[in-house]
Image 1 (tube, one colour):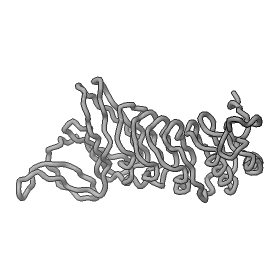
Image 2 (cartoon, rainbow, N blue to C red):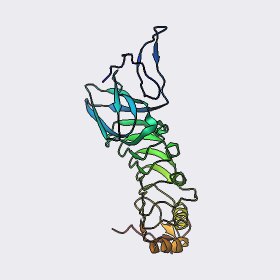
Image 3 (cartoon, rainbow, N blue to C red):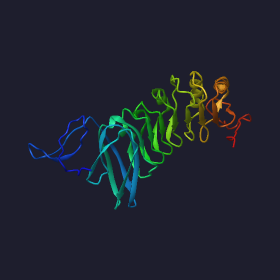
Length: 281
């Protein structure tokens, strides 16, 4: 462990990130490193411990926002970090060094973690991002395209599901209960067989659901699972063939039962043919 104000000579390759009196002008300075993760923080309401798990390679220096920095070498081992905040307040989390080699970031369901997800844009090797239950915000299009597993359930992120076309390595995603409430259509990649897409309670329109089903049917992916149930609209009858094609390839589709009779509208008042059906238990 190196104190935050300790001087350490090193190269960018080594990944040192320390502050201290300059060797030349004796002014405070920061030895800049290739990349940084900043812009998220812990909003501590009650004193106690906070923890997270990181995985990757290389060397990083992490500051929990309490005036000290800790140097860590990964060597492909999971690192479980814990710090104790003896008082309430905002504590900015700063990670510098070879963050471009971090492959997994897990907030361990901390509901006191806040900030913008664009903080992760420099983690260009990131494969797993687990922020479920946190209070992070921001547009999902600002996330690294290397992601294979993305868990943002019940967070405040927003955006368009068309971002999925950029995640060519995706294997599992959960955006349920977020503010991602549109899908503008996209040429989706041929993901690995068995992909899991959990998109519940996004208030997607029938048009969004239809476009998503048609675009998924146009891929060659097999044995996937799509959960678009809960607070989403029903599909229309125009997707009957798309659903049949997906099911023939081994897909499991969980959605609101039935389909919308009038385009993107589920119920048109004054029309005796309007139907309302609940999602099957």
